[in-house]
Image (tube, rainbow, N blue to C red; front, side):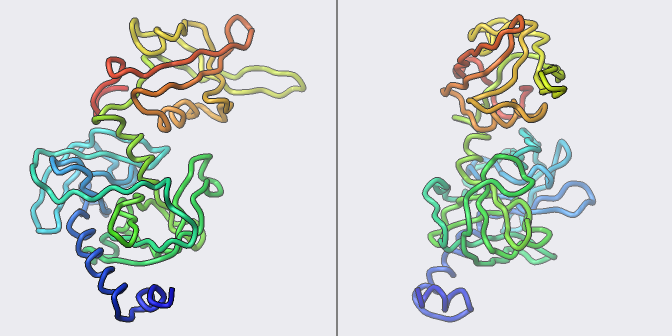
Length: 300
């Protein structure tokens, strides 16, 4: 542990040398993302054919400019955007790009050393080190888990990689909460992208509604207005007039509850939906088959 502490404080030794190699590896797969004249952020080359992951708050428009570490620039399309998870996927035609090595965020543990790379305050490929404090929901940030580490994030770090000391990307840096940096876990990014670049879709049109309940209280639900024939919801037996009230055993706390549930589900998996039908509570199991999904970037 002493060698790690030495590396964290700028010392030398085998660990510091290993971190230098890690830094170089991460800097190659980290890009600069710009949208118009607005201040930009960072991104990670997720696939060598031109798929880049960044934050939703960085890629706000339909297109963005991506600058690679070697200075090449590309005009990219924003093909997927999830504000709740603060993720966006950019795509541009390319080949053999230096894609990041993607790690398994489920294996992270408290006190593990991590590195964040980005382009803060005009610097290119700047690296900062820290320790994981938690992998859990953050106060005021909903029920979804974040990798919380004491890495120093500054404007321009958003969308860049959080990696272990081997250089495997385990998160996408998003924001600062208190004294901790928050990163979207890499496995949540994989769910965001889905299997082979597709995301699950229900195939229904919903409208938020208020459901009266006892004691003067009310709950929120989503009224089904339309069901696409042959879609995942249709196969599960959902119908017009059903009111969705929860997913996976968790009641919706707002109209974005279904989006959060879908964000945690991939093609080939199942999702249990709780609903009201004719005033009675019931449920349906939705199976997201590849035929019911479509490539990232098309309508959901």
